[in-house]
Length: 308
Image (cartoon, rainbow, N blue to C red; front, side):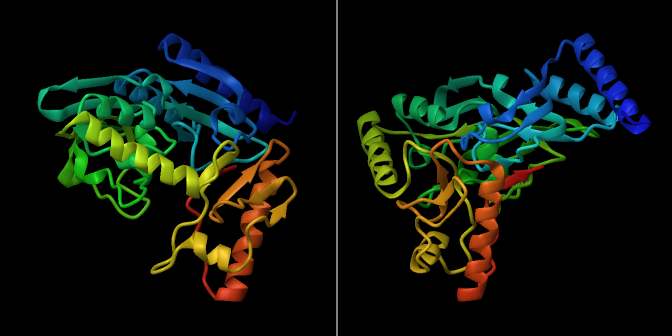
């Protein structure tokens, strides 16, 4: 072990001690394949699970002091982690999973709550607005950060306020008008981490909302791969185009690299049956982008995040 590596390991041990003194829950060298929907990825040097906005801020300050980079993990969809894993800190929002309903359709929900679960709880209480997003397999924080969408569903109009955290500003309360929701992007990200959101939904007949939600789920199961490991849609739609249709028209359904393949159900999904590596997935993404650029003169932009 060289001196640089010794110094880094000493710094990591000191960081672990600081987390323990601050009573912030964490683990070391945790396999991220357990936390991603595609079921792939090497270990996180630190997997930290803050339980509040204040603990997020404590974590960010400590990571800055000990010169460790921070990445944010929700439900692990739309994410590909390298086989070698991630050095530094992975902030896992799973403990920020509280949901509270108030009169007038107001919902307070933590960044780590499972989004389909939030949808179903809202529907069961006769609250309309989220039902079209029931199939999005992420956390609320991930949905907000990536501005995830499905079938004309958009979460932006339902947001009243978001509590976010940055290392410099601490806890920040942002009204809807201060948040920039763009196509598969938002104001949130590496420097501004979602802790909690307040949504305003519209009361309606529970049976009618449930029927709409069930119809969305039926359509999703008919048109997207179910029961296999996947990260969700791989590519953003080019302007005026559907990425899935573009890949389908080029005959790429079933195209594979190693154990990873383009889904035969929907061409904008990469799936595997347990025998793939992250290297296979990345290789397949690169091969598909090259094919599309060559044949269609379109440069596809990945929708998934890649950690290395």
